[in-house]
Amino acid sequence: MAGSELKADLWITEYMTPWDIYAHGATEILAFQKTAFQEMYIVQSGSYGKGLILDGKWQSSTEDEFLYHEALVHPAMIAHQAPKKVLILGGGEGATSREVLRWNTVETVKMVDIDGEVVEACKQHLPEMHAGAFDDPRHEVVIGDALDILDNSSQTWDIVISDLSDPIEEGPSFKLFTKEFYEKVNRVLAPDGKFVLQAGPVASPYIAIHARLVNTLKTVFRDNVSYTTFVPTYGEPWSLTLSSHTPIDTRPEPAEIDRLLQEKTTGGLSLIDGTTYLGLLQTPAYVRRAIAQHQEIYTLSEPPKFFGKGVTAQNQS
Ligand code: SAM
Image 1 (cartoon, helix red, strand yellow):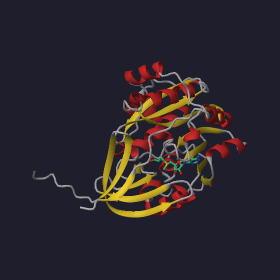
Image 2: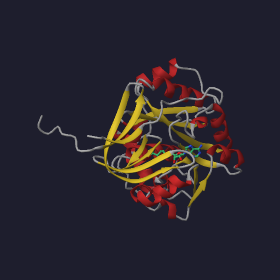
Image 3: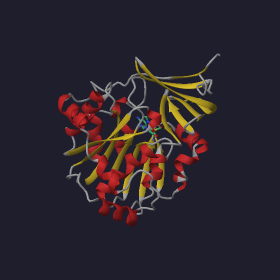
Image 4: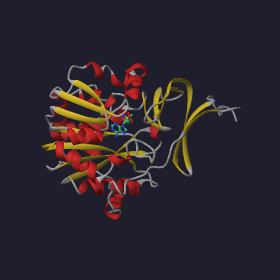
């Protein structure tokens, strides 16, 4: 059929469930490493610019990562109104740091990533993502396990952002989606601090996991708002959860938020403004129903286990 020939023979195939895959065609492998923690690819994709893949899971691409990183960072910053100290757990390619550094109230950003090889490769191959964030004098990168850093941190933080890879069984992050981990986060969070979590997909095969993550957060934090963004390269709606001990206003006046962003950020946002922020905070009914239904929580003895690794392969056509 005319116009239907595929153009790639290199495919990044993400295993979403035992019955579903999502494949992105790539034209070039820019970097490949088996690090001490994970398998990393950085590729030039056919449709979405450059992409970072860890353990076969698509992390982000230059074409649509703003839909994830703006949604991850700005709701917590807006809810706080004047954050100065921000801790990022994970954050590999530096786009989360880039978004945090847009705020002129921010004095210190610490990014803790377990994998220095991933960070170095992203510095080199993904300047569009970090946009110089690693060179900002306010920014510090610590290579280490987020779990250990929280145990030994004496600092308190206005914002903690969990920007970690999905908790796949053999990955380095599944212990960080548990009650015990959120209690560690709470220990370093300022009394009016905000915690935001990359909380996985809310497509039907995964909605119960998301619901359990929210219920796990509820055992630690007073107010928890689940919200959803859509990032085409993830192939499904993606959730985030904003948590706080002080009430989160889910009905803000958009014009007020626009004024706040105008006054306290360098601007340049493509997803978030007052209207988008108001919309994001309205948790969809099917997600609220799932949170009410799936009450079991995650602990170190019962952590979440996302379905496994994908593969990168050249079609032998
Ligand atoms: N910003 C990314 C995106 O656009 O999807 C989110 C993923 S980011 C690449 C995930 C990072 O979490 C990786 O760089 C990985 O090395 C890091 N990570 C995984 N487990 C970790 C742990 N236990 N402590 C610190 N960092 C961890």
